[in-house]
Image 1 (cartoon, rainbow, N blue to C red):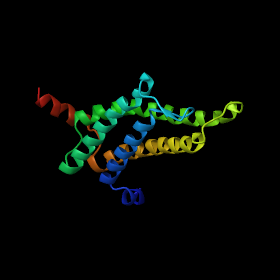
Image 2 (cartoon, rainbow, N blue to C red; image 1 turned 90 degrees about the horizontal axis):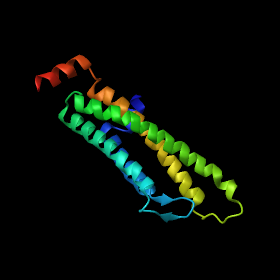
Image 3 (cartoon, rainbow, N blue to C red; image 1 turned 60 degrees about the horizontal axis):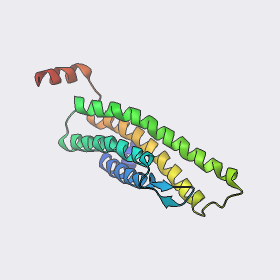
Length: 160
C-alpha cells in the first residue's frame, strides 16, 4: 500500500479520477458500432449524471484533505450513494467487455476500423475507474479517517 500511496498521492488521485471521469463522460456519447457521437439519446446521459455524485465525492475528499478535517455525515452519505454508483461502473465495465466480444457476430457487416482500438480504450478506462474508485475509498479511510457513527450522530444532533 505504501508503494501505491507514493505512486498516487491523494491529490494526484483526485486529479487523475477527475480526468478519467471527464474522458469517460465524453465516451458515453460515442457509438462504438457506428463510430459516431449520439447526443440526443437519453441513455447516453445516465453515466454523466451519475458521475456528478462521483465529482461531489472527489470534491469533498479534496476539501477534507486540504482542511485536515475528519469525516462528516455529508461525506458518509455521498460515499454510500457512490457505493451504488460503483455497481453501475461494474455493469458498464462488463457491458464494454460484452460489446468487444460481439465483434465476431457481425462478420457479414462492415465494422468501423476504430471498433477494436476504441473499444479496448473504453474497457481499459472503465477498469481504471473501478480500481481508482476502490483506491479512493481506501484513501478516505487512511487519510481522513473512518466513519465513527457515534461521533457523527452526536455532531449532527448538535447542529439541530
